[in-house]
Image 1 (cartoon, rainbow, N blue to C red):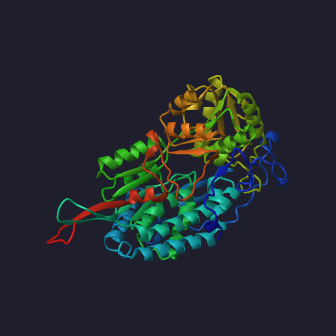
Image 2 (image 1 turned 135 degrees about the vertical axis):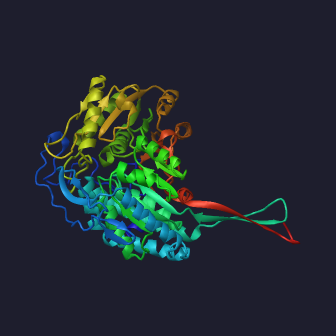
Image 3 (image 1 turned 60 degrees about the vertical axis):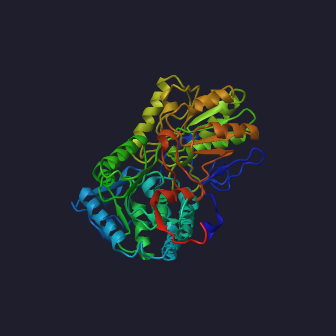
Length: 540
């Protein structure tokens, strides 16, 4: 299976001594073989003849206690095609009553149901069956993800769906390998630790990578034996509901996974503050993360993991191969329409190569293919919705007003939908808004630095600490920077490498805890110490 062969799918790695590889995401930066209907940003192509998505929308209700049901209020809300802004479906709108129903189902499934009492091997088999069903339905899921989110279909189909399968294979492998320890003591006692599931987990996922964030949350929680109430992002509810149905087909007992769609204040807040939820995991903005943390603390002091915003530095050193550095920096920022929490959104370039880098970065942005994400060869689709679209344009206006130099882009692309021109600013300084705030869009800010001490100080002068990128041929320089940068992930001569086993999370206001890898299991386990006296032990 393809998912078993690929260890790292959302990735771009450009060795300082090797040629540029474009095999993984073939739409990056090459002009040969482009679809005749696809034009480059530089040609100001109109968005014409949009592809009809090759998928039917089958699931729009909540999944509660193993059944798809309407909202208790009967309300629905629209979900949109970001290519046009048109409604593609109406989805059940959850509120506190729906959260109560879902939590009650999850609590009953945990306290009385078969899931926590299954052997870990049996739980593992259900996760593996689910992964096989995802692989079977990957074409429909990729199409639905692109339709509801706007990301390039090639990215969804060739990178994200295989990674989704890989993640559940990974967590299925962990299910029967979770165990405690035997601990020596200063006296005649036998001491063991038990690693127990934490109970009912509330999970709130974002809209930028709906399926992958579903896997990052659901995979470790189920592997540890928990039950779940998951709230989708209101912008992108459709794929989570689809894969929830696949979990039922795989044999997941009713109530173990419950999925509610709705808005943050009316569905997310009741979940975070629910007294019968034992743990909350949230991915989203830092401001919303603060609210989730406060709600969890004010209710039953439930533990919280947060994966929040970022303003990641991408550092191009003076010894860099400029052509390769330009391509990698371009990918680090513009991937997924710039809608990545770890996007390399502060491009620091050494003053000796700054001018050359700037000209080539501008040229690369002008070559970027913007258009219908269903069309082959398109690199950039629309932003997620009108709110994000307007937010990005406001930051672009702020960049202009702060006297940064607009090298290219700076406006909407086309006349409908939420497309934005790939935008590059030069002469950016650290005090500018575009160098401080998380824009979450296709806006590259290029800053100049003098030496390592200068760039380390400036890169760390931020409230965020999610990720960083370093591009250099010198191992001593790489070692200096990787240890000095206060970030949860530092990519050296690569970016966005998201293997299932690599932990991901941030320093400072970029979050609490880690996703993926063995570290993610800790989020969903309690540690219990069991102490028993020993009479006349042969040894201690």
